[in-house]
Image 1 (tube, rainbow, N blue to C red):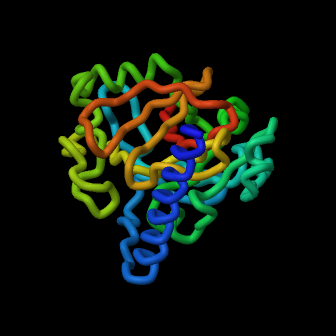
Image 2: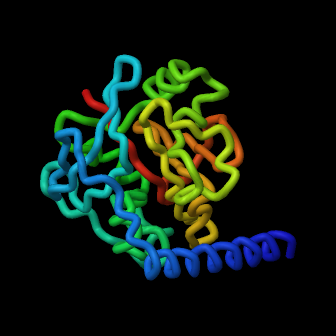
Length: 229
C-alpha cells in the first residue's frame, strides 16, 4: 500500500509537470541559441561544445535518432514495451518530441543504446566513470553541480541552488523514464546522465550544488552527453 501511495503521488506530480509543458509550449518561443561549435550528429543536429579541463564536452543533451553507423534507434512510446526492451531504444520525455527537441532537453536513451558504443557522433563517446569524476574534480567536487547547471529558473525549478554555469556545461533537467514504475519523472527537477560502461549515471538536481552518482536500471531512460575522443 505504501508503495502504491508513493506511485500515485509521483504520477500526480508528473501529470502536473506535463500540463506545464503543454502550457509553456503554447505560450513561449524559448528556442535556444543556434550558434554551434561545429559538432553535428548523423541526423544533422548541431551541438555547442565546451572545453572543461583537458576534455571537450557536448554542451547540450544528445538528440540523435540513429546510431553513428546509420542504424535507426527504435522510438518506443509504450511504457510496457519500454520496460521490456533488451535492445537499444529512445524516447522523448512524456512523448512530447516537439517541445523537448526544440528546447534542447534532448532524448532519453536506455542503457542498451549507450552500450552499443555507437550512440555519439564519430570521434566522440559516452563518458566513462573516470571521465565524469575528472570533470567533477576539476569543478570543485561538492560545488560541481552548480557550476554545471544552466542558470535561472526558466528551465530549472526554483531555487536552482548554486547555479552559475561557469563551466559552460549547461546542464538541463530533462528528467528520466522509470522502467519500474513505467512513467516519466523529474522533468525540471533533475538531469540524469549515463556513464558508458555500467548502469551508473550522474544526477544534477535543482535543490543542490552537488553531483550525485546514482544507479539506474538498464531499461531506464536518461540523457546523454558526449565527450571528444
